[in-house]
Image (cartoon, rainbow, N blue to C red; front, side):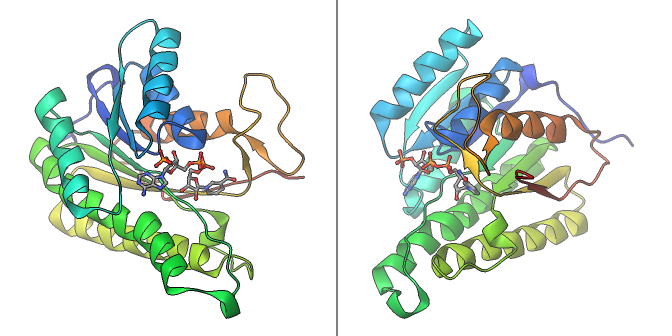
Length: 242
Ligand SMILES: NC(=O)c1ccc[n+]([C@@H]2O[C@H](COP(=O)([O-])OP(=O)(O)OC[C@H]3O[C@@H](n4cnc5c(N)ncnc54)[C@H](OP(=O)(O)O)[C@@H]3O)[C@@H](O)[C@H]2O)c1
């Protein structure tokens, strides 16, 4: 039997960290494709102004701000509930919220390590744990994790960040195995970007040398999500040749 599919215009997405940078570009692309998008992070004012700007660009109210802290278990469960109760579904979960604390191996603090691991890895686990039963029940869903080239290589200046991004890829492998075994119509994509310019984001603006323009991330997201449901596309390594 063919796997269920849905046009973007019927999909509901949750993009963590969707108020800024890569998450904002993802949210804009999904909204332009017709999806309703909940953007969620801590800074409510930033989220709201991003939602306003993206809605005016799309000419429709498709982007909705939701304030939450990915380090809080209850708030992770609540944002997933919010999507389902307000919009009736959760089709795309983009685990994009993330940060780095630059501490070398000799400088690592308990606080720095926990902050990075809780934001970049534990938060993603909590959101997946809450979202997966929803996706399984509706027989449709996509999970997109924003890892990094720091999830494939080690860098001396950000060991906690590397550990979190490698960990995210390991967790994603387990989710894939779970989905395979359960037969759920859920795909798991990982982005492993190199440097992405989140300052020069305007269309046509040159990215800094060594960086890719953020629009490439957005285009790749729509491309990946548009593939047939039976196609497996896993880790996306994307970086500048320069
Ligand atoms: N730009 C790059 O070169 C690059 C390369 C590889 C991977 N990445 C990854 O891409 C993702 C997005 O990064 P970006 O470059 O677009 O930087 P960014 O603009 O700083 O985005 C990070 C987002 O995470 C959110 N966030 C941080 N702590 C949070 C928390 N406790 N709860 C909820 N949300 C939280 C922030 O929103 P609030 O402050 O409102 O909470 C912010 O919107 C990150 O996972 C990053 O590691 C970036």
